Length: 261
Image (cartoon, rainbow, N blue to C red; front, side):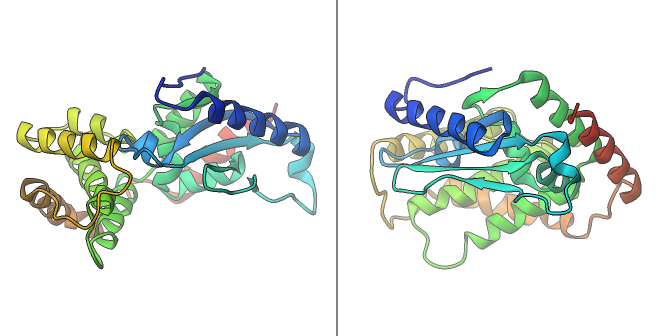
């Protein structure tokens, strides 16, 4: 499985492919899932946005039985263009069991460097079975609030707008706990008024051709949308867990063991 939009620099993509192959060879792991995260996958890149490749790796079964287990994170050299690192499957499954929204977002990225579709679907099914909807919503609520602290720039505003859109999506899909990753899809799949969607599209278009949007004021209609959605999501702060923790651990354990062969 591979999904690379034409907007990505082919030389950069080739280097990411090379780094992923190097990780597999150097660390003796397989990489069933590698995607783009960050602004490119969120749907609002700038011309100078770096590349945030994230991957999930699986070690040999015997490595998980060692008394001295290897690190559960693998990183490659960081520079102005490349930010390539990944998590062990065990770490990923544990984070899913705790309701970590970042782990879920990796599975919903529209940009895939390399991927086993069955592996992705298996993890998404696991997420649907064990993830607490309240935990995901609280993640986006807290991110949205945090980004409102300090000076607001047009560029930074996107990091408030996307969590607000994710909360709206969750409100519109009461039986779901795994929202899409990118902002345009979140808006399209929600009951967001068309003027809000249009204003967001205009801001995305401006960011796509401007290296630095500056400290201008976001459109009033989008500021109201963000404020309304964060306020409406306050009830998630007190939402009680819906799943039995023991059952969640058992399901996660069973899935993890099934992936080790």
